Image (tube, rainbow over all chains, first blue to last red; front, side):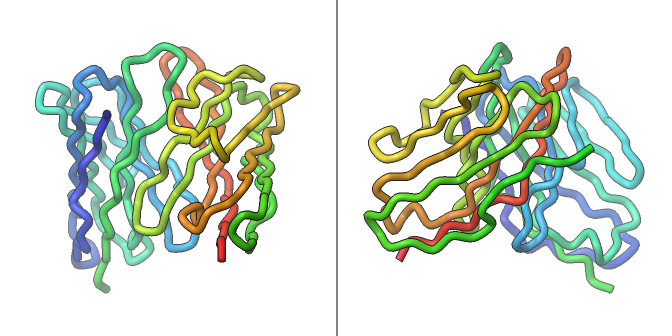
Length: 113
Length: 115
């Protein structure tokens, strides 16, 4: 049974600071990794995908993957109040046809103005 | 590009009644997924379709849940009979799955309340 672990928070970060969100996963053969943002009452919105070890940057967001440690992280630079949301980490399995996502419970992020 | 469409957006039923949800994926996306999200948890995969074939339904409670995607486009998820613990948001997602990328995009969801 694949598991994805996240600290549920809330994680409180001052506006303009860097928010750091972390995620660990249990299935060593997982190949694809995603971060979704979910506002209260809304559906998950894809913000980052990462497939290989290292860093991937997109605007204020940086995803980091370390497959040896089974660890994924998301950094949000220059945090804005609009970044306040729940951030869901999701992984897929070993590839092939079945690639449904296994999600963590999410980290609730609060950006304090 | 239009996103994933779902209907209805909200549904309230009594336990033991039946209910159906509809999903239309992003145009050109061959892969379609149904997820269940209970309050305070991450979404949980129920079923995955590739075109009109089932790829993974290992977590679908088959005694009460069924899903179909007859023409490889729209899909319907049904619950019959519903239980109190089925109260959740039902999310449909689709993916183009080109090469190594299997990014999934979610619809707005259907919020089901079972009384």
